Length: 334
Image (tube, helix red, strand yellow):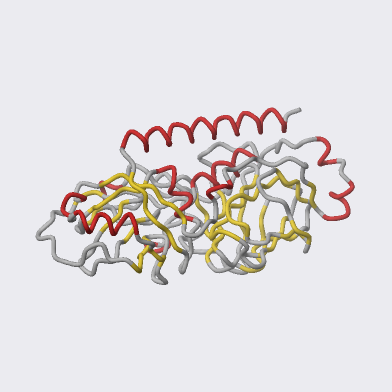
């Protein structure tokens, strides 16, 4: 099966879980910004977690299907429609050959994920299909999609509820979806200011008590210079002074750096592999998907956690994801 790109959108790229094991050679991990949404989308179409999908940013593409296929849309609500009819999210959707998937005005969030049964079929680079645009590696020729591209999908015998195949909507609308959807923890999605939990970093103690209080009590705004490499935060400046010579060291998705101008930077999926600014915190992995859905102009506030609390939240999220996968398998196969 092949997806024909009619319009590429603002930034539509192929992403999977990332390029691990290469950071010691200076190669960024990249991968999906909102890994949780990617994983749910893959599970909705019975893909392995390692399968690649499309990451859609704010202004979505127009895609045409050349064969019947099973897809899932998760993450941000970007007004997705198939043949100009709204398509539901967080559930499997059986799409007819010749149908077109398009996106409209962003309703909530910043990034949506389009998973196809079988996964997007592009050649792996250094063990991953993820696109790293700065170095032009991975994905489709190392770049965002554009009009005229064709995206292959791995051939697979896509599972599908029998009711979808026989639904009148499949003939009349060009797609059909069940009346159930995956339940996401919507109480914390797309709120303002978004509460982002963090664990103090190795340089947290370099801040004075007043500076630490500023960091956790004031709101920050995502700056216009933010991208997949890092979010530049504006507003409160917890500290704007020289901390002296700090040796460069490894950084991670969610590392909070404090440059001399006092405006924190949160490193994201396309982050560099090492950094020399003070590391004042590390965003809890459970909140990285929430952070990834923020766009320039959105506000956030930080809440301090202990390492044990962050690990507990991560474990609970893993259990919830496993339960989601089990319930999807049981529903689709019966």
